[in-house]
Image (tube, rainbow over all chains, first blue to last red; front, side, top):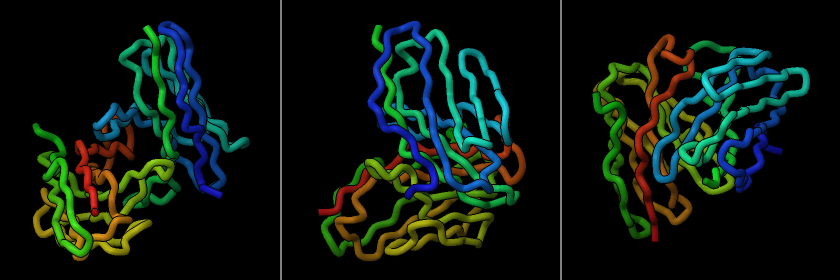
Length: 113
Length: 117
C-alpha cells in the first residue's frame, strides 16, 4: 500500500464549477501538507501549503487537512480553463531540514470552457 | 532570475551508455533534489544535497550517482543506462529555512525527458 493515495482521474468539469481534489495517507507522522500544480511538460509549482489540521484559503483555492481521518483536500472555486493541469499532493514529517516529500501520483484535471 | 534550469531537455540513450544531467539554480539555495516521475508512480526522490560538497540517497538511488561541487549546480549521472531508467527527471531546490509559501517551497526545473532504448 502506498503511503499517499490519490485518484489519478482524469477529472473533467465545466468552467465555473467547484473542483474537489483529494488525497489520503497512512503515515500519521506527516504534519506538512502541500498541493503542487503541474502543467503539461512543465515542472511542478507549489500552490498551497498547510501545517497540521485546518483550512487555508488563497484566492480561489482552499486547502483542507483532516489529520484524524488522514485526508486532505484542495477546492478550486470558479474554475477556469487555465486551472487545467495535474495536481499533486505532497506531505512530509516533523523533522526540520532535509526530509523528503512523499508525493501522490497526481490527478489530471481538465476545465471545459 | 532564471530559477532552476535543467540540461538537456530531451535525450535518447542506448542501453549501457552513460550521461550526466545538469541542474543549475541561481537562487542561492542550500538544498537541491533530483526526482524521477513515472506514470502511476508520482515523483520519487533519487538523491538530494543539503549543501555544497554533500549528497545523500533518496528513495530510488540505485543506478544513479550525483555530485554537488558548486552550490548552484547538482549533477545526476547514469553510468550504464537501462530501459527502466526511461523517465522524466526533475531537479528542485529550496532555501535552507522558509520559502514564501512555507518551509517546503521547492522550486522545480522544467524537467529532462530521457528515453533508454
